[in-house]
Image (cartoon, rainbow, N blue to C red; front, side, top):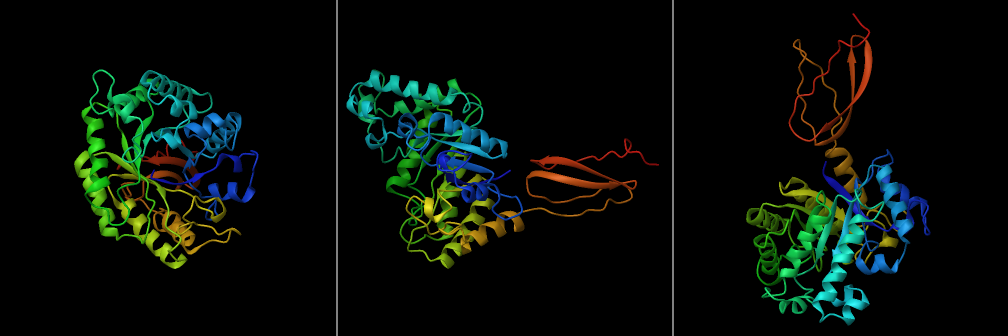
Length: 373
């Protein structure tokens, strides 16, 4: 039920142009027992420029990757709809950045195309609607002079509202990096992120969740400060959150990376606001810039961080238990939320069933339909 995942590239999977059998296999089978990531996010393939210019894959190849992932029962985050820095926007928007009508029409077209694109629509349950708006403010001046606007940031709420109109079922996130790094628990960009969230909520934006990127720069800050940040945002806004782009800097040794990952991931998994944790990459060859917490080295040998992740997610946080009912036919088991296979023995027969456990509930097994006495 909790999202455990990573950024990936669509070209390396599903028979696409840079197919890598090891890469593809690890996504769905990290522990050698058929258990892999249950969520992924495309690193660049859905970004505005990456999509329109088809950087690594064609649209057909991307849809093929999405189809393959869904066949594996792997969920997909959309990243991202609008990244409002000039360096991240298509060239024609840069060239017309002072024309608010032109820019809005392009944004609206972007939302309409990507949220309705055949093969993507219905297969991407959540999107980072806006990315890094604290430091990427290129469009604020464009829209500050639009009648009725005062800051230009009114655009951001309009984007959220339009995304909701187009795709009512999609969860909509604000994603940023300015809160979890370097003991950043207040002041400066930290407070600006909170202010931007409040502005969106005050403007009626349908904001469903907060993305904390988790690029831990410099030397990793202590877990108490991480928990303080998560507490602060949850107390302030009550919104669901995810760690969306976790990595550690190269200065971190493999041993320290494994220990820090254990502590960080435990803190995140324990926090009531959190429903997911995604690495930004998991293999040294396909990494953005910080390999400190990657799960696999270049030769696919597993790192200590890989050992730690697999131990936590598929062992310590994995329920595999046997229960015996009492004379009233009752048994109680405490289990992590998720989808289970249940094998039960009733009147000499063995029956298998599935249970999707998302809350405390009673599960009744009726033996009357079995061919027994």
